[in-house]
Length: 319
Image (cartoon, rainbow, N blue to C red; front, side):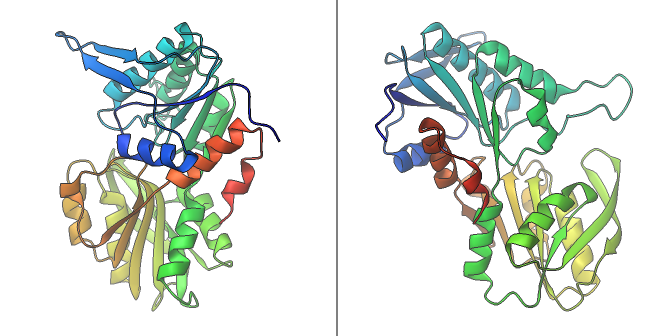
């Protein structure tokens, strides 16, 4: 197969430049030089420092905190590329902010994930690549192709490399909504047993464990989730599992938001290890000995290579 005729350009926002550098290194390209600055009144300014005319451009930007700043930055970059005659603009959003506002839970609430999808398309995005969207149906909010990659294969490889024989391991979902994710991990590890934690949320960012469904006493339990925000939900689940007979508890989660009390809660949690990915840039002062970070750079880099060459992306869903 010959090389694609359109030049490839990789452009990074400011939200997670280390990850963007790793992705570029995987592909064998350098990031396109650009300037991102603020005007005196706080408005965002962007200047792309090389021609993108006729190019296939991949913009890498997680919409992580500060969410609105990084989202606006992304929209402005897309607009700049469209006005500079880029042939195709693919937006790589390792962490898709506002994904938890995907439906109306109460009257007079917005569906902000849909609004964000509309903004991205209006700005000029031709494709979106994300990792572990909080709600997979968000793909349906777009009228352009959306590749929703998953970190599950990375977790499978890490578990097999670090936990030895898995005869006494069970997979746990910290809530009903995460059962599909937990079942996927359990299946890829050889159909391991599944445990479901039934909880209720009396208010946002507060959860209470009500019941634990499944057998886990005397077992090593792997809690798998997509987002750890304030860490209240995942740490209360870990505590409940330990109090009710789990031998060891491990946490595997894709997006480490780690807001507010999260670092303190994770330090105090009765867990052996916590594994995150680098979809969100984690400050050094938050990390401690139990936390390990696995990179999604190879996963994203391979997706970009396959999209570029019109090859299947579905093979990336397997370890």
